[in-house]
Image (tube, rainbow, N blue to C red; front, side, top):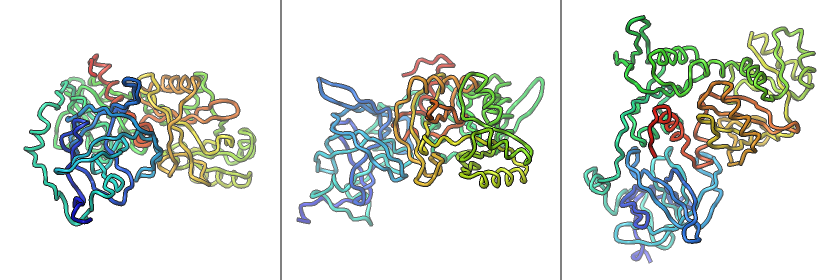
Length: 458
């Protein structure tokens, strides 16, 4: 039986003739049950009365310029838990796999593998009865040189549009930042990652400038995407204001980011625009604690630090004694806090609606871990696709507009009183929502910039 089986290394080059993919590097993993192929812009459609799915793929790792447009018969949809812990619904296709001189039909799920090391994962179901793996070796069926890859992919490089776009952020390895860089390059733009702490500015009436490490002048940028961490809001917004003064388009303005980071002011602004929020109290003196608790309907209640983010600095107080202790403890540290009614009927769930340029482009439901009330993905919450109601979409768009944000993550909770707005985030993360929805949210952000410059790109 061994003589009849193909021996594979832990990494191999394979191809998919029916998809028009001449070669792609695969991670061969007998520990994984199913096979997965990197795919973006996934869209089901009907072809001659049958269910099909079309998608795009960047077959070469770390090369987002090379794009292949694929389509295949759709055979199933499955809930899959990824290695990062996200549960997502994936489309399943069946197509011909070619390894060396051998080929056979396999099933694969389609998912965005930008955060993975390989565009293709070959699982044990696809190899069962046909191949064995030698984990100590690689490329037993042959390796592909750079020149060979150029020969195999000669006509699929996208031309640049000429826009120079800077991503103003702190960590180039963060999933969201990597995806935005890749999306911009994929659409033909020159992308530059700008570390906030390595930018500095020249304030001058005649020749104002922004410099980057080594003295590079950034005045020739066409657009900037600010992704500013809360702990560096002051300096990040100062830089954004300087870019605006240089007539460089900023996807989110400095004023919009500043007011969205002030939780108290942002809630007041939302209320002034007719958007409902959970009943909220704010006070400065510990003497007001008892009345403050009554103001929001008693316990259980939520206590929030104004400067908190990603669920940090948020505490659930289930009893009056616990609420008094938490409130007084925060105030003894001279911390600014909000006290907010607890929406018990939400059962640890909330909605994240991603708004870009006045339109809801994707929505997920976030669910907290058992015993946890915060549904943030960073705290172990899970994400699943959900269809928002018309009212929820209107609230999200209205909230982003009230804040002046072109890009916003709007968090809504479903209560017995109807949808209530929790928070508006000016630098929403992409990993959870892209992983759950399979939508190219980063690409939508780039399209918003192109729209400002009236670029008619596909």
